Image (cartoon, rainbow, N blue to C red; front, side):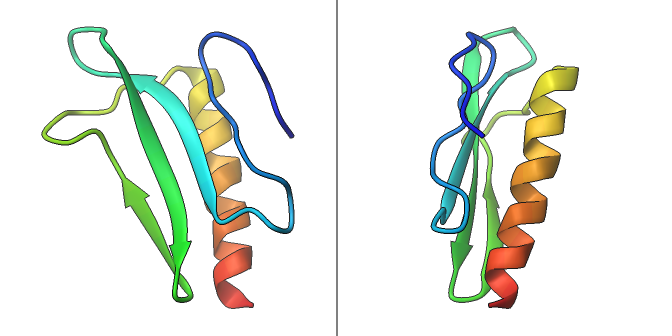
Length: 76
């Protein structure tokens, strides 16, 4: 599932993906990014350094899907 809309970034290919990037904002509405990774069988969520991630509904849906896929990958 890849999208090119301005509010979200979805990268990788299903099954081979090890990193998901989801666009978000911070508390003062600057563009930021959350990253979900699978590293040695563990799911790692990397937020904007020193920031709070603010997600729209669509971005939250993508984060949920990325976490679900990453959990599946980590179990393999």
